[in-house]
Image (cartoon, rainbow, N blue to C red; front, side):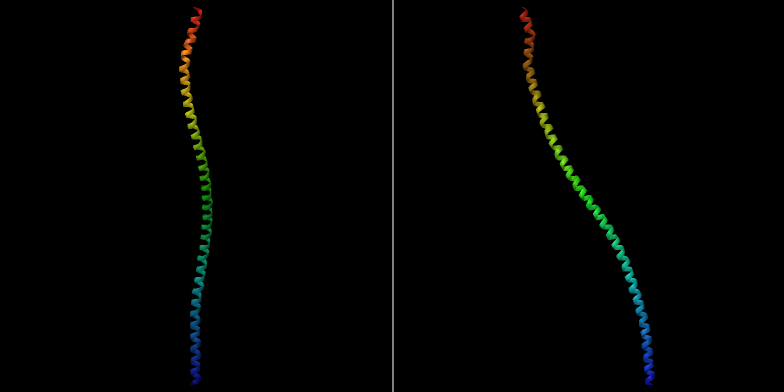
Length: 124
């Protein structure tokens, strides 16, 4: 009887180990499947990260170009403002010279009239 108990215990132990081993295989399979899924997700995330990094670098390059262009626009704007200021100064000088010319014409008109009358006065 004791042998039967031992035999039954050994058989039960073997059955439980087979059942548990089977359970472990299912768990192992699930774990392996989960690891496989996680690896696939990691690969996808790495690809997305590489793409995002490329896009970030492209945006950084574009931002640098925008900064360079902005600096050039600022420089051209300053040059334009200087040119506009010089043009205003030149326009003011032209207006001043026009005024002087008008004054000179006013002074010359009586002299021209005298010049016309002078030959007549000399010939009399």
